[in-house]
Image (cartoon, rainbow, N blue to C red):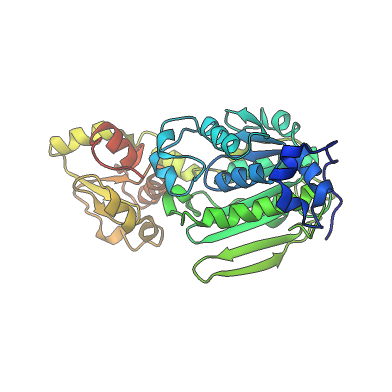
Length: 392
């Protein structure tokens, strides 16, 4: 559906701006009017990571007048494979500051506003209220539902994108004109069922594919041109080089944008999404050891069986000495239980401790009462015990 322009046009473009945006100005659909609307627009990017990187760079190049960046993290070397707004020299720097420098390097006429804080229910309404449009590039479900609910309550449109390995998705959610994110995904997946990019990986260039779609949609919504992805989900398979669309209808029973909403204010999104299941939390209570404690057990020849519940490709990057690889899924299916030793204490670990806590719950219910897991996982082990090893 075609929609009216989201913002009013600025009073004028300077001579320098006319030169810069000339390739936009000669497109009849954009023209002087559309470019003035971009100049007057205020767009917030949630995250300056994989999707935020190309989105911010192209929003800046397009001439969006004010760009806000919500980001509290620092640049890590593992980011550089896909987060192209940052460089080698930025490692250890604030991602927000690094992104700002890159944006201003692309277009000095952009006003960049930094929000160097974690987006939470306590600050999201105040931050979002300062912008016309939100571009969501987050990679966790709690923040996605937070962004959605805040946008619905504020009646603001937002462009959503998601990436994982070789697959990407994008849509425009605007409850005034179509469905919201909850209409598509009423409930988050069970904790631990959908791995993050940090656990499952992502093809770096996929970020550019989905990020560019997000910016295209943002420009269309801001200027009122074309047919935005409202009520449509774009699905991209990079391996097959195939795009397809799925219609998304507004759910009259939606908890936040439906006819009788039950979510009328922001909630506890960490609890709603359950980053770790209740069973895992209960299992880990009193059964979590530190990497240093594991090192002491290894040095003391304790009767333990160290089991790594990650995937083979993760195990090949870095591992704890003596650890046996049994992926998490084999425990969930029950096939791994029969091969576990009965005369040794089982010590589980994963990358950071989330997956191993889920497996620990399985072992506890199967009778392995003294099983434990390593808090912080192999990342904690490297940081505290073997810092010469790589992390990912």
